[in-house]
Length: 447
Image 1 (cartoon, rainbow, N blue to C red):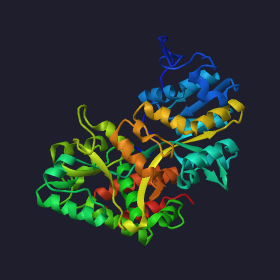
Image 2 (image 1 turned 30 degrees about the vertical axis):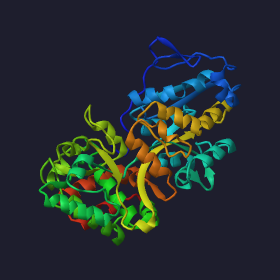
Image 3 (image 1 turned 180 degrees about the vertical axis):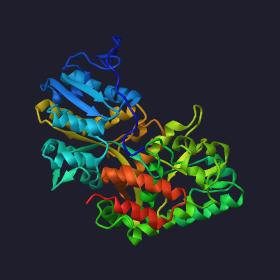
């Protein structure tokens, strides 16, 4: 999916059908009615009662995902009397700045890029997390996650949802029938690729076409390889431009990715030759796995929604996924991913109450119960996750051996991360020399 958030739209609260759940009344499609605060169903929210008011929340989350999210906090809203007014926008990144500049900032914003939140922190617009929120955050997430919303030791945002961008999708049936096993190291994965190729099947399928965002799936490849080959310190230096984009260590990572992505013996299963990667949409790219026309496809956890209706996702199903393996298993389990962070522009008691609730395991489990979502929260009940790949991703993210890094291009200046990096990778896939691509991106970095 593109580095900016998925295309999602909020629902207008226009339906009047009311249904009762757990003693609280809800308006389908949004809105709420107050519940008896002394009822058993409201006991879990008693600490936030007495903070009635309206809290505006702004994000990029839209459509069905927005409906799920609004349902996930509905009982909290009904039991506390806090009216959460949600707005989702496909132009969130640009419009949140317009709102802040115009004196119409939302109380809370869900930031899909830590760099965007940092912009408002640097400008003095974002409100630091109060001690109560910080305590909940430190109980719930690893330091890796919290560091992305921390500036000069001050926490400004708490993680919310997560997505896993190191998944390699495959067919368990195909693997089993051909005696293949899920690789545990990079070398084992290359040996597996050779074995699949020897059977006359292209081991990899790929596609980087995504409209105006064409090229972003190839950046995921590079980010994953840098994290595995060079380690988290070099990854951080590269993302922060402490080393140049054309540093020899980055060249080495491109060379390793080249062994797969521009290898005619390895790609592009079900679609054609290497050049078809540039014209194959990321949505269609993995489909040949279902027909045993390619063995593997690197794509994020969100790809679970792309498989056709009737596809069984699971360890013994039609498709499943494994984490792109490490180059050196002694260095831990590298994972590259993304997610949203809860930031705020106001500190009224009702706003703090919502920030606190969104930082709890109770909220994470409420949202997970709505489906199609998971979190890196340590208190998340894995049994409540609907999709097997969501459970797998959550298990890996909370593993103490996991070395997590946020999607690099989401942290870079937009002109690079959502501009020259995408275009450069498209040129590279189409045959441009690695040094030319790296010099082009390096020269574009804002001074």
